[in-house]
Amino acid sequence: IITPGHPADIDQSPVLLWKFKAGGSLVGSPVIADSLVFIGSTDSTLYALDMITGKQRWRLPTGGPIRSSVCLAPERLYLLSGDGLLYRITRDSGFVDGLFRTINSYMGERQNDYADYYHSTPVLGDTALYFGAGGIVYSLSLTDGLINWSYKTGDVIHSSPVISNKRLYVSSFDGHVYAFDIRTGNLV
Image (cartoon, rainbow, N blue to C red; front, side, top):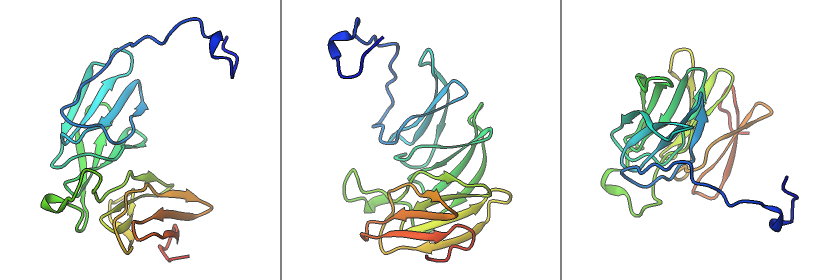
């Protein structure tokens, strides 16, 4: 038993169980579900690793660096890549069963530095998926994958949206935090 505030009470040092080397940097946070660890890399690959052994179960190459985390949905993952595509992926196999192309979110040659990217981690609502790409906030229908609404902010969006009390909040590099009616996309 470890008593908070008393480091001397720790009986043993942590032990490394496994490690994994991706082909690029790991910017987004790992996400765990179904005994798998999902992590994207700037090598443009999403990896699914066994949580116990660290062995790769599957990998999904994309067309651009991955700096966001995956969004979990029942039996699916949603991933926004630097190629400007939102991928809908089956969790167990890594099979892509849906794509959505964002507007003006591919960085290509315009990237000024390592932290200059134009996408955020998607967040799942009751009936829609929300994310920022470029300077645009999107609401996509989970039933048909079509845009429910979108809103152009004054600059790029790196942050992940937050849902609270039927509102969607997202910040932009323009220095503003935006609040939207989650159903209509009207600016609150």
